[in-house]
Length: 349
Ligand SMILES: [Zn+2]
Image 1 (spheres, protein in one colour):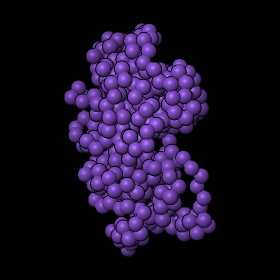
Image 2 (cartoon, rainbow, N blue to C red):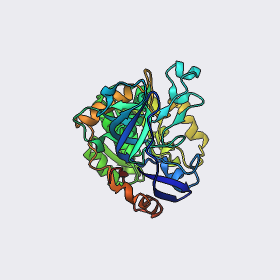
Image 3 (cartoon, protein in one colour):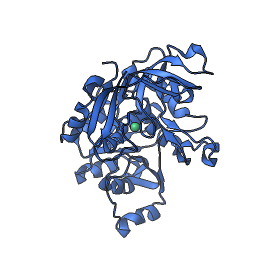
Image 4 (cartoon, rainbow, N blue to C red):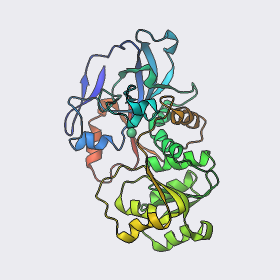
């Protein structure tokens, strides 16, 4: 089969490799589409891979082609998406349902071979069934959709209240739409990029705010009760200015959820840190996208809203790259401004 193998930093090649055989408890997935995740960028171009040669790719959908011992034949032909965490089920955190907080887990597409290939063999428990009617390109968005759903799930989210979504790239736009589907009150999208804000508006943001413009921040605050701030704030960018903004726009007793992976040191002035004290904020982080029973509500609900049209992906796919042209991905990632949304790989082309 064809596979995009990373041989060294920035050295991605399309190689002919043996098609994997599903071991006991595994299924062989014929991969349809595989998304390139923000977390793949350091793996591809910043020496971030765990080993070489590696087949990356954890955001994929496909159809089960064959099954290993102990897996019912009725799985063959089913559409699935990958839930890439391979938990250490013996860890005490896994017993509590905190699979991504356990020690000793593996991960399809970073710690073991992933989906940037024509086929990949994965444990059946990692293959999330998708409705027959789903477009498999949409199916490849299940993993990123669940990132937002998990943050909402662990937050004790209350419908009907004003929410701020800070950073409306892929994760932010998906999270925003998930919030809407769960009955959030007015949603204000914050970003520094007017194009992304326009896209957020298209997918359902009630208000948008360019956080570089103080008058817009003031107007956004004015939409909340007593202009006191938002009940819930989701930070998705990992950028220090946005992290500080999250504390500023949260209202009294507000919940601030850090979803974005941080990329730079954050310095908080005493008055900024004190916002946590003065407003009695609840500040929490979110890591991955799993809950009990594995892989969790995030995946079943995510599959539903992706297949029934609740989630609009029109703005999100920037480029579809055929697997046979995979080295293009490195060029795209190294060219500033070349990628404005998600790169999806068509793994059968
Ligand atoms: Zn991802």
